[in-house]
Amino acid sequence: MPHTINLNLDYDNPIKIAENIYWVGFYDKKSGLHCNPYLIVDGDEAVVIDGGSRPDFPTVMTKILKTGTNPSDIRALIYHHYDPDLCGSVSDYEDIIERDDLRIMSTLENNFFIHHYGPSSTLVDIAKYNDRFTFSSGRTLQFVRTPYAHSAGSFITFDDQSGVVFTSDLFGSYGTQWDLFILLKEICKECIGHAVCPHGQEYCPIKDIQKFHQMIMPSGKALRHAVKKILETPAGMAAPQHGSVIPMGKDLRIIGARLLELNKVGIDRIVTEEGDS
Ligand SMILES: [Fe+2]
Ligand SMILES: [Fe+2]
Image (cartoon, rainbow, N blue to C red; front, side, top):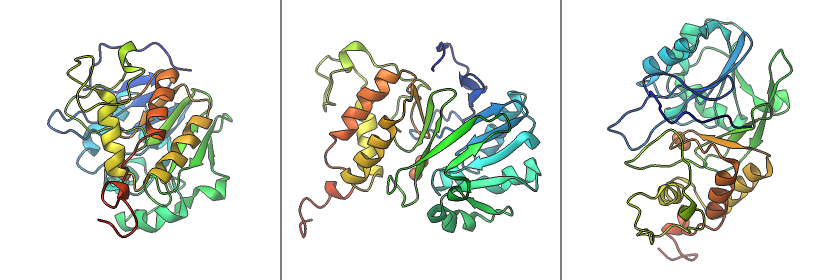
């Protein structure tokens, strides 16, 4: 379950979000789209989730090293879909990790595209491992498929031991304000996401999350299916690939409810009825 949150954060360093789980992203003050790679350490083994873009790689790898992790401890690179903001640095990881048995794990549908980043390792279909990754300790990461949210082969990862669900673009956000963690204010918990905050707040994190999903997800149907899959896990914290970590399980469920009722998602923003545009 989530641990105490340190709000005095130094974004130039890796940040522990749960026991042996670190945010190792690049905080780019000029960008509204922050990418969040994560490192999970289990004894002398580690995995990287959605490792990040090529330009971010020096920063991300420096942070991994700062956690005390030896790159050769990294057993797997897990890619929830094939976008360049996740996969662009796959060859850079391979060069530093130098393991013949490194697993680059994703779905078959994603691997068709990840192949074009030029990795030298064999791409592993998660189905071959029953949609899970198991550390030598027995700790298991479960992969849950979220098709078309937003790629055909998209999935998310649930870590039973920590209660963290790594949601990739789901529960992500785009906006000019960014903190690693979102803690919903009491007045925001009943909010349905207005254009102008009825409570006079300058910044609305829920509105930014809604806008991001309306833009990135292909349809409300795909989004709702994926959000339900995430809410079916007993997660106490969501760690998305963009935007902010949602460290409180109750906030995760409130935001999930807002996403389930979201209109004008993807193609529905453009085509209102069949044939209309
Ligand atoms: Fe994406
Ligand atoms: Fe993304």
